Image (cartoon, rainbow, N blue to C red):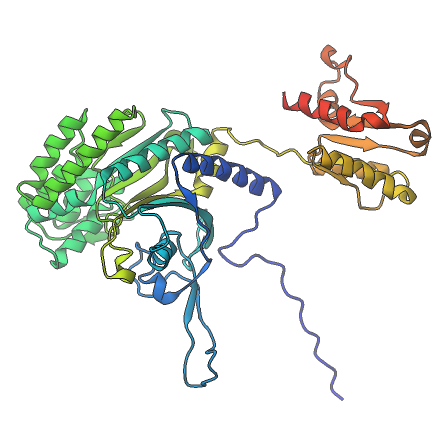
Length: 500
C-alpha cells in the first residue's frame, strides 16, 4: 500500500500587498480616529457603518482614477440560491472606498434619512492593485459627506472641518494648508480652448493637467504641444495643440495671485466667455466669502487652481489638504510631506440608482498617511501604556491574584494576571517590560501573611537604571510596600504621577 503523501505545512507569510498591525499601531490609529470622530460629530455629522461587501452592480465604475473596466476590486461570484444550475449568482466585491457604498445607502434609505444627510464613516477598504512601497491593498479611510444640498456652504464647511481636524490631531497651523479648486472652471478653460464634450483631445488635456505638480508649467506646455523627454530620456508624445490653444490651460494653472480677488480676475481671463467657467468662479467666490466670515484665513484654506488631481471624478469644487513641513526621503533629500486628504463635489454618483441627480460633497482622509505625518512631527506616543501586571508567586493562590486584577479593573485601571510559567520571577518582569507595563504588583506568601503587597513602579525603575546618580530619584524608591487594602489607591497614585 502506497504511503500517504504528507501535506506540506502552510507558509506563515502575509499575503502580498497586505500587512499586520500590532498593539501600538492599532492603539495610535484608534486614538486618532476618535479625535477625528469628535470633530465630525461636533459639526453635526452622524456615524454610518456600511457593509464591507457590495454588489459589483452597486459599485459601478470601479475606482474613479482607474480606466480599466472591472479593475481594482476583489470580486467573486456567489452560487445561485434557487438551485438552478444554469443561473449564475450575483457578483460581489469588497468595497474599494467609502463613497460608493454611501451612494447605495442613500438611494436605498433616502425616504427614511434626513435631507440633507450628513454622515461620516471610518474603516478599511480594499483595492486589487499592484502593491508598492507604502502602498497596500488594504488600508483605512476616514470620510465625511453631505448628500442632498447644492449649497456652497456645505463645501465651505468641509474645508473648515478639514482644517479643524488637522489641528485637533496635532498638525499645527503653518504646517498644513487646505487648497480649493473647481472642476467647472476647468470645463470653462476647455471650452475656451475650443474642446467641446466628446472631443478626444479633451481627456488628453485632462491627463496632462494632472501632471502639473510633477512637470511644472514648462512641462505642461511641452506635453500640450509636441511632447517632451521625461527624466528617463524617453520621449512622450504631446497632445498636439498650438501655443494659442494651450494658453488658457497655462493661464488657469498659474492664476493664483496674492489675494482671492487677484486669483478670480486671472481665472475670469482664463475661461473667457464660458458660462460654466464663470459659474465655477462664482462658486469659488462664495466659498471664499464663507470661509472669511467664519474666520478661516489663508494660513488655513486657500483658493489654488493648481490643485487638479481627481478633477475627472468631481463635478464642482475640489479640496486637498497638504502638509507643508519638510521630511527626508529614502535618499536623504528634503521634500514636503504632501497630501493627506482630498475630496470635492460629486453630483452624479447617486443618480446611477435614482435616475435623478443628487448633489453631494465630501472629503476622505488617508489614515495611514496622517499617522505617518504625526510620527514625523513627534505627536504620537512612542509606546502606549500597557496593563498593570499582577505577578504570580504561588500558583495555588491564583484566586488571590485574580481578585487583585478584578479590583483594579473595577476602578478603571487596565490590569492582568501573569498567565505564563511563574517559576522564574525574572521572566515575569521581562514580560511586563515587553508589555510596556507601568506597574507590577508582587505578593508572596510572606506578604500575604502580613496583609501587604509590593508595588513596583516600572517606569521610575527604568529611569533610575538609566540615571542612577540623579539625586531626584533618591527620595522616590521604585519599589515599596503598602497595605493590601491600599492596592488600588497606591497604583492609581503612581499612574497619575506618570501621566503628569
